[in-house]
Image 1 (cartoon, rainbow, N blue to C red):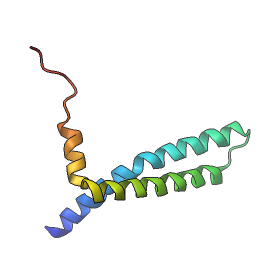
Image 2 (cartoon, rainbow, N blue to C red):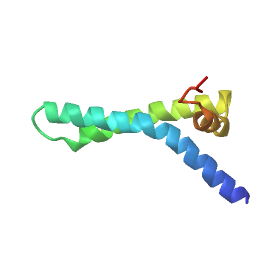
Image 3 (tube, rainbow, N blue to C red):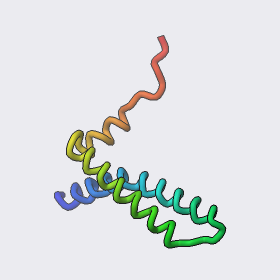
Image 4 (cartoon, rainbow, N blue to C red):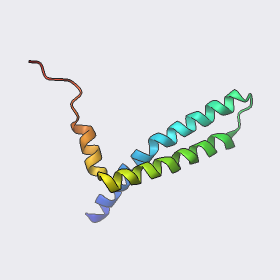
Length: 84
């Protein structure tokens, strides 16, 4: 059971780190296409920068709030106000 909880915890950490990684990949693709020639090294470099930023962000969340509590807050957030 400990292995399963470690797997879930790792996947949650990766989910937090994935959003800046995807943003970095999109920025790299935009810069690569803007230069006129498609350069995959630019896209990979920006993706790595995004993953490093995402890793720091995920560690900050893990130390301050906790990853499970962070996702619990996201899932429990009320998007629609109650009617009165």
